[in-house]
Length: 371
Image (spheres, rainbow, N blue to C red):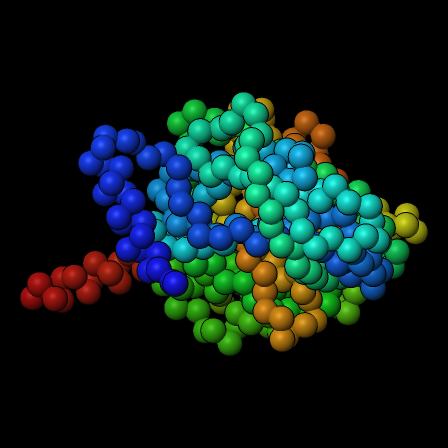
């Protein structure tokens, strides 16, 4: 027998109200578990110890916290969750953790419990449920032109968050694009996603044909092996000005300033992280930032979008995913790569002149309508 989810939840909530019970836990739609197979720069690892949780929940106007116990271990610990779609809308974020298995062993089920609450937990959830484990692919080629080819798979581990700093107001770039891209195309893909979002939400009137991934390759100095880490963003700033696109681009290394940039809602941010491969060469990846929360422990929870199935146009892009940045070490905890180095953020902002022109245009339109 099937039930309408909205009806069931409505009946439950009405019952709780009638008996005077307050509800602080958000009803989650679904938890989907996968064992991750990696392809990192053509280095293939199957049946790994890395697990992926695709967590679907109803959007909220406040920060929530996700906790997951998996096979007896606390694997997702008080990770802040910010809704990136409207309140009440179903949405999904991916989290990566340690299944507790030996690499090379096929995992088909897990014993788990979870909590999705308004407050952090002092201990992992205590229940016991059995979940089916499928398979997922994480296929990414470095988008930074470093010359190496041997990317080693790091050991899996838990994703550890903390309570948000008091007074934190949640913010996310809503309905952010996440386009499919080819191998080594993470930089132009992130730039294209960002420009399309700015153009749509700020009504900049830029020609869509100038905002594609293919076009972004031309103004980020992209080559088949990726983009040059030290210059792609300055090249982009110069080329956008030549195209008369009203966007300024600048580098930022202070994550606290990145928080401010994102929450102003006028800017967009890309995150560049790097690692050293098995040949001693620097490799890197670029993601677009959707939300960021600073914890009381000083670490930051970042939710980002990128295509984690590069070169596969049939698979579609994965959901936003979350990782943790620790400014004390300068490291980001990431699936597959392990602890990467935060190199810098790239901030994209509409030029003040373009915003002024938009404001004047809107004012003129209002005046015409009044007349």
